[in-house]
Structures are given as C-alpha cells and as structure tokens.
Image 1 (tube, rainbow, N blue to C red):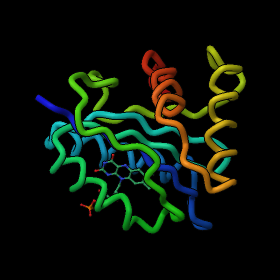
Image 2 (cartoon, rainbow, N blue to C red; image 1 turned 180 degrees about the vertical axis):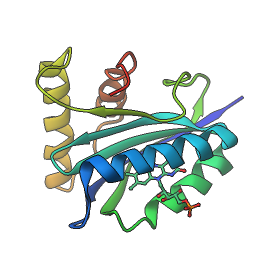
Image 3 (cartoon, rainbow, N blue to C red; image 1 turned 30 degrees about the vertical axis):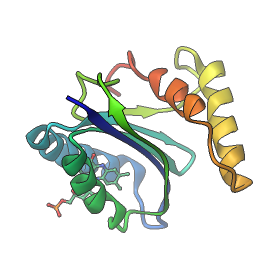
Length: 145
Ligand SMILES: Cc1cc2nc3c(=O)[nH]c(=O)nc-3n(C[C@H](O)[C@H](O)[C@H](O)COP(=O)(O)O)c2cc1C
C-alpha cells in the first residue's frame, strides 16, 4: 500500500498548558489515530510542535483537518508531503510524543537538525525533505515520555 506522510510545524497558542493539554491531545490522538490506521510522532520544543502523520491519504487529510483547526496551536505550516512511501517510520506508534531536551540520546544531532529546520522556516525557505526525514527518524526509538 502507498502511504501518505505529512509533517507540519506549529506554535502553541497563548492559553496552552503544556502538561495538561499535551496529555489530553495524546489521549484523543491515540484513540482516533488507531481507528483510522494513522501512526506518527508529535515533537515538542520551546512552544513549538513538529508532527508527522502517516497512513492512508484520506485518513491523514481527515485528521489533519481536525488538527489544523485546533485553537490550542496556530501558525500551522505543512513542511513535508510524501505520497509514495512503502513503509511507516513509526509503525508501533498511534502517536508518540517526544519533548526535546538535553538529556536525550543524540541531543546534539537532533538540536542541529531542529536549528536547520527552524532557520529555513524563519527565512521563509523550503525545508529540505531529507533534513525533515532525518530529523523524524531520530525519534524512532524514543521511549514514551
Ligand atoms: C499539536 C496537536 C496535535 C494533535 N494531534 C492529533 C492527532 O494526531 N490525532 C487526533 O485525532 N487529534 C490530534 N489533535 C487533536 C485534534 O486537533 C482535535 O482536538 C481532536 O481530534 C478533536 O476531536 P473531537 O472534535 O472529536 O473532540 C492534535 C492537536 C494538537 C494541538
């Protein structure tokens, strides 16, 4: 099956309560994503999200519709789309969560990739697809946090 993958970035809105809201999002996400066969990873750092969604195209578009209209974040920007992927990156995760912090394994590499992505976004440049994929793959073996 050809999978569809989408990555977006967003900023948390002012009223966002990191601990409470992230828990709530994950609970809903895991339920709905499971029922639609969606997997992925939600990454949080310094008031910003990067999320990868993967699954059947209609399902990803459906979920992304909900996510994009969620007032808990804004300035949502799609930075990656792939229509032809054969395998999932996060096959075991209906939605994993990673909060980037200095104690994590490969922090330096993750930090470099994060900075590269944010720099391109700041300068309104297209973010390189390989950089995004490399960044996402760093979270493949992360533990539940
Ligand atoms: C950063 C972020 C990521 C989210 N990720 C997902 C997700 O992967 N799957 C999902 O179903 N909802 C996700 N949500 C929640 C949806 O935006 C939305 O609140 C939820 O699907 C609404 O469901 P309801 O209208 O049935 O209550 C996310 C929300 C935010 C702010």
